[in-house]
Structure formats: structure tokens, C-alpha cells
Image 1 (cartoon, rainbow, N blue to C red):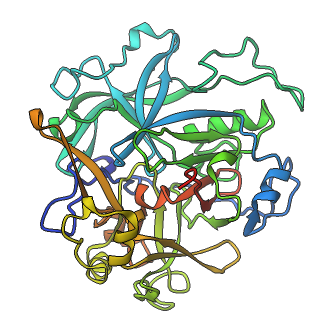
Image 2 (image 1 turned 180 degrees about the vertical axis):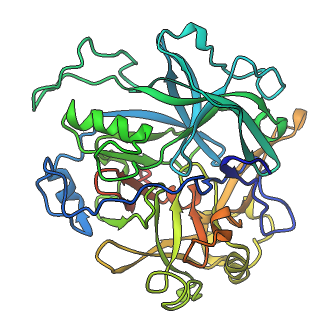
Length: 459
């Protein structure tokens, strides 16, 4: 194991005799080498926010606060219901890459010009000498492990842009703040002097076959806005707030249909992708605030809680932690606890790929993820079998594609679970299996995550 390891991705093994898809990813953060500085107490919302923080809000309330008009949107490609990736632009002039938008890790990395292996041959590479704003960082090569694979990279700093998918990607001519009420469309958000990893090596497994170039880590800012430990996401959202007068939110819609793009909204919520009859429920991040972790109370199968997180001794008032992770394919948990969930779910029906959603829902039990909201109330998030069973295509040369299915729930012991400073039973990951059903809103100003049922169009 390397001395420094920023992220860990496991090529998740499924609970069935057949392995889960080899390209299923679960990206997470390892504990950082040095503990973050003490966090400041948030006595109230920042001065520029003039609303009470509620634990739940109706769609009408969200719209009345202007959250239904985000600053900009960017599309996400659905790769076989296993990963969602979109564009990111690095340098000046910008060089375009495709990357997983990953709330479960902190590092941005893309293939570097010195990466000559087969995993890099068919991917975009970053050329630092072609960027007028690139600065090489001091330090040696770093390594990240990804289950059976790994990447090695050196780090530099450069401008990183997020672009609107429908308006193009053109920076404004001025960086002056906009007047309130400005209707001029925003096409890009830029953050200067951001850390960029440039790989020199990527293992063929799994990166050779993956369609994206790299990973765009999107952790929260490390405190409540004084600029210390500011993340790339935090810098983008700071620009969205102070230049464009939009709240410091990023929200995700993950499509269940591979022919339909997902989307990321900056500075608001995409009202077209939320269930208008549902409420958005807010969940505070469990400290430390270097990751989007919320309090997991329990998991229930067929309405019966499994008592996975104990009662008052394992964590805060008997809770575990769950990372809300757009970069992970599955719902995963520590080996022992996840085994209990899988045992209660039972095996997949024979030839499940040929079953309708209705038939699948009759044969398998409902799964409920129970989270504690910001008021201390326990909220049940139901998942039907058609939500937690992943259908995807296999390609077999001349015979053409065939569809198969696997459980979107797996076992994964993260480094957190072996950390002596961790006070819970273990960290769960709420990946794309969960986030396809629930539209997710990440509030960097108040360090909380909001969840509301997604709307996927007429069924």
C-alpha cells in the first residue's frame, strides 16, 4: 500500500454467484494525512441568506425562494446505469475532458501527457505546456488505488471550468459582480489555481474500457465560508453566489434510462426532474465536513428494521454514517451489516432481465434507507426492487447485446471502517442505485444534503 492514498475505489463484487459488473465503481475518500483544523460553529446562516433553515420544504416553498431557476446546467451521460459523467474544461485555452462528477472523492485527475499505457491511449490527455495558466506544484508522485486498479499522478494548478451544456462554454468578458436581477445567461463558471492531477500511469483494469477520462472530485468546503480548505466545488459555488446571486447549491438528476441524459444544476434545482408532490428533506453532514456524510439510522427490508446501527453506543444516538456519493455505482455497506441486508433480500429471480418491473416488485421485498434529518426526525426512503436491481447490457461480438441484471447493493469495507477515530459501526455508501430514485441537493453554505423523489417522466 502506498504511503499516500487519497481515494479508494472498489470493483464491487455482487452478492450473487455471478460477479457484479466489472465497471461498477465505488469512489470514496480515505482519511486525509493531517486532520483538518477545528471547524467553526455555525451560529446561523451567512449574512446574505435571509431565510430560516427548515428540515423539510415543499416544492412550492423551494420555488418561492427562486431555487427552481438554477444558474446553469450541464449534462451527464448515463453509462449503462453504472456511471454518470460529463465535461470539465482545464487550462487556458480550455482543454476538454470527460469525468465522473464525484461527490465521494476530493481529487480532480485526468490522463497526463506522460501516460502512454493502453489505459490512456484512447482518452484525452492534458498538455500543461499548452495552457497559459498552468503552474507545476512542488511534490512527488502520488498514488490512488481503485480495487484491482490504480492511478499514479503528479499535481499542478490551473483554471478549471464547468460549462452549460446548452449555451456553450464562453467566459464572460468581465469578472465584475452582476447587478441583482440580471437576466444575462451564464455559460461557464471558472475557478483559478485549482489542483489538477495528471496521471503518468493508469492500470488497464478498469480504466482501459471505461468511456470517461478521469474523476472530478466534488467534496464540500471544509468550513463555513472563511476561505480555509476551500474545495473546487466551494470555489465554483462562491462565484455563483457572489458574482451571480445564486445560492451555493449543486444538485443531481441521475436518469434510469441510458438513452436519457442526467443533469447537474448549479445554484438551484432542476424543477423538471423532481416529484412535485414530494417534499425536500434536509440532512446535516456528520462532522468532519470534508465529505458529504449524513446520519444513517437503519435499513429496513419489507418494513422490518435490521437494527444495524445499534442503540446509542455505536454512534450519535445509535446511527451509522452514509456517504451520499454520485461517483459510486451501488449502495454498499460494511461486510457484516451488508450481508444481513442481502440475506433478507434473497436471491434474484431466475431470468430477472426478462421480468417486468411490476413482476420484479412482486417477487422481491422493498428496501428502506432510514436517515436522520436536520431536526432529528427519522425519514424513511423506500426503494422498490425495480429501483435497486440494475439492468444493463452486455455486448458479445457478433451475437449483439444482451441484457442482464444484478443487485445494486453490495459489501464494501471502506478505510473509514477501520479508522480508530471513527465512532460509528461503519460507513455506508449511497451511490447511484439510491440517487436514481432520489434527486440530491448539496448545500455548501449550510453543509447539508437534501433529498426528494426524482421525476423520470410519465411511466
